[in-house]
Structure formats: C-alpha cells, structure tokens
Amino acid sequence: MPLGMLFGILAMMLILSAFFSGSETALMMLNRYRLRHLIKLKHTGAIKAHKLLQRPDRILGLILLGNNFVNNFAASIATVIAIKLYADEESIIAIATGILTIAMLIFSEVTPKTLAAIKPELVAFPAAWIYTPLLKIFYPIVWVVNLIVNLLLRIVGVDVRKSRHDTLNKEELKSIITEAESFMPARYQNMLLGILDLESATVEDIMTPRNEIDGIDLEDSIEDIITQIKTSTHTRLAVYKKSIDRVVGFLHLRKVLVLVNQEDFDKQAIINLLSKPSFIPESTPVHVQMLRFKSEKIRIGLVVDEYGDVQGLVTLDDLLQEIVGELITDDVTARKQSDGSYMVDASITVRELNRIMHWSLPTEGPKTLNGLIIEFMETIPEPGTSIRLHGHPLEIIKREDNSVKLVKFLPGK
Image (cartoon, rainbow, N blue to C red; front, side):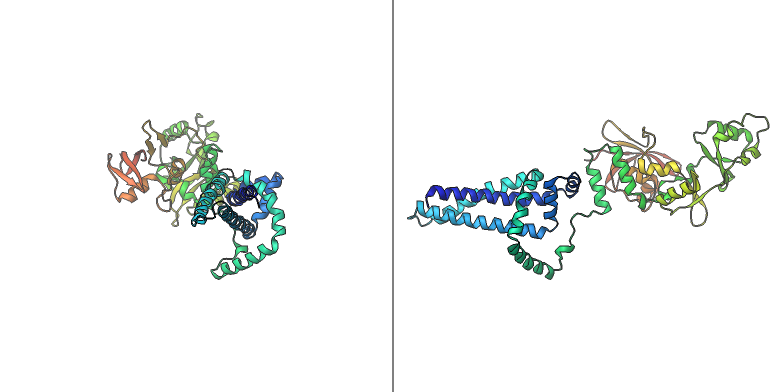
C-alpha cells in the first residue's frame, strides 16, 4: 500500500477518534432540562440525543467500541509507516508511538473534548444522527459488552436501569435558581426561592413579635384612643384590655374613621365594630395558613403558643411577602453602604436576611437577627462590640434596653 494512502488512512483514524472523543463529552455534558425544552419544540437532534441518553450504557459502549478500534488501528498504521520509512532504525516503533500519542492527545482528545465541553449541542446533535443507525448495526456487539459491564456493576450494587441522573431535590433546585441571576431579575429569583421555602416555614418565622404589635387598650382614655386611631399607619388594630393576651377583637380603621368625630363616639362604638379574633398555633405552616385565611375570608390573626399566650401577629400581607419579598420596594431593613457594608435593622427575621444577602444563617432557633446575636453571645452586647456571626463579621451599632436595634455587617473578604 502506498505511503500516501497509509497517511490518508492515519489522518482518517485521527478524525474518527476526535469524533468519538468529542461526541462522548458532548452527549454527557448536555443540559437535561434544556434538552427537554428542545424536545417540546420538536428539535429532531435533541429528540435523537434524548433517546440515546435514555440508556447511557449502550451509547457509551458504542462510542468506546469505535474509539478503541480506531485508536488501535491508527497505532498499527503508524507502525507500518514507521517501518516503511526507517526499517533500519531499531527505536523507530517507540518514536512513532510517541509522535502518534502526542498527535492523538492534541487533535483527537483535548481539542475535540474542549470544544464539546464549551458547545455540547453543536457536537452532540449531529453526532446523534450518526449514532442512531450505528447503534442498530452494532447492537449485538454492544449488547454483549453491556451485559458483561452490567453484571460487574451489579456485583458492586449498581443497577444501571434504575439509576436516574436527571432528578433534583429542593436544595439543588434552589442552587439552580440562585445561579440563574443572568436570566431573571433578582426579585423573581427571590419569589421562586420563597415558594420553595413555603413548606419549611411556619407562621412563627414571619410573625410580628408580641412587643411590636400596635393595638388599642380599652383601658386608655377615649381621647388617647381617638388620637391613636387617627395617627395609626395600619388598616387593622388589635383591641384588648390591659394585655394583648386579653384581646377582644380586631378593628378595621376604615369603618371607625367616619365615626370618631361624632359627639357620641365612645368605647362601646368601637366594641360594636370589632371582628372576632382569629388565633393561630405558632407551628402552623405558612402554606396551610394561607389556605385558612382564604377559606375563612380573614386577613389577620394572633399567633399563640402551646399555653395560649399571644406570641405575635400575622397578616395575609406577611404570608404573601414570604413569596414575593418586601411589598415596599424601598427596603429599610438592610441598606448597603458605600464601603460595601450593610446597615441592618436587628428586628429583621433571619429568613428575610438570608433571602436579601443570599446567606444560610440557621433558622431553627431564634427567628430574628437580634435573637440570633443574643443566643450566639449569651448576653446582650454593648454598642461597638464586634463578632463573627456564623462566618459573617458584624459590629453592634445601637442597643436599646434589652435588645439590639442596629448592626453593621462588614464587607466580606
């Protein structure tokens, strides 16, 4: 056989080896979820690639069968060429093997696999057209190889048919959404993450704490009550006697504002307008309470512990905020400073702080940043105190009485 033909065959083997190597990487690198999307769009290459990947053991058997054949054949041709050119050199076969190894490494392995890793669809979809008929032609050989391989894998406890590589758990799905910032606004990311967290969130995680509940004490003078009604920023207020544990009902300010200027307006007029209070166990899941609000057609409730004591207050807006984020776009709970630090209101819930900062502070214990700091330090820190809270450095800026009010999270290094 002429040398020219031998070199041509060798070049063809290198090209085929590059095809097998690159297509193997491309098929394994395909995004399974984008592949399903393309199948819905009737993309024929995607359909064929998906069918091949249903049994990865078969397509890998075919690819490696072809790749090993062309690599060994290329080595044989290179040996024949070397002997024809330099029959008198004793070390020519070793030299030819070394040259062929370098050539195959560059042209048949690294280059095609790098291209396939960067542009898997560009390589995988055309290759799927070729592999589909090849798999039918060489199926008996592939079947025998896979039979032996599957038996070996079963010995170590792996069943190829039951293995699934395209299923995601909740944490993996959250990671995908977090990394998709270039495809969707941050607001929509937070909404999706909020939906995924609904099952693990309870009303205790999102309630307004007891000490922050704004309500009307019927023991106050009627003048003070009228002033409170006129200046309140809320649409509904809890009405109680001396203590929030003795709540009478909820007052809708829209109903009472038209009456406060009347001369005969008194506390009884307020009591007549009250709606029956709704009590919610603190362990109630958020998604369950949303359905309860909808079925009972109410928008507000008091959260109670196992002893019946009021722990906080939750509204329909609080539940919706767990999904859509802050309903007010100007977020005053966490403000970024020019130096990269964040000034954070310590009353912010740990879940909301995690969502804003993309952190993973523990949510099993204290529900607010103030509680988390106090639990971590086992004391109420003074202003100027600096700590590293679960890996995040912060400084206490403001303290009032028995709670932290404002902290500064220092820029991460």
